[in-house]
Image (tube, rainbow, N blue to C red):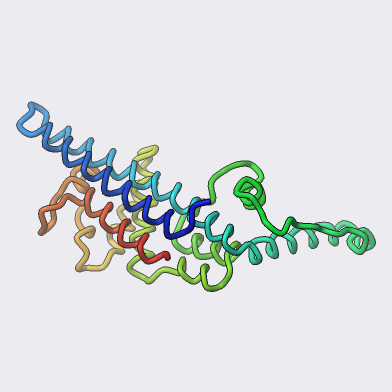
Length: 225
């Protein structure tokens, strides 16, 4: 069972590897006939891949923290089950005893937090903090109550992932809102004509915004230990 520090180190290593591949691909399309279109596509694919990696990372990290200390998670689900029984029969609630193994396996934890087999994910920084509070002990949960700038970045990442996944008008509107909410000094703040153009732009640096997403994710992950 990987410890949280190992989960974080692995995630940061994967980000670095992905950004290196992205750099190689950008070099490969240099001076090609459709260079601009290819660069836009690569930037979009890079950020989408990073966002999916982030979702898997959050799942693995939360499960890892529960493996270290399952008391809060077990207590949360114990209360839900108990309240559910009491709402149907207070008499049966007195007779029911819930026994939890002293040591939970990863499979048991994942089944407990989501019986349907989906990852532990969140659709915003706020909901991530809420889920962490439900499942983790206080010293671990507080790590997911992000600073304001980090919260804005996570919300932008999720909005960008949503747009790149289904390219709806509504998701584009939300993404633009999240870009506008970024700090005025952030290189991720800027005009969004097309998402590909926004992501491949190099704002006052040698890196595209696609790479800056990766750098921000790596820095944020390091704060979660």
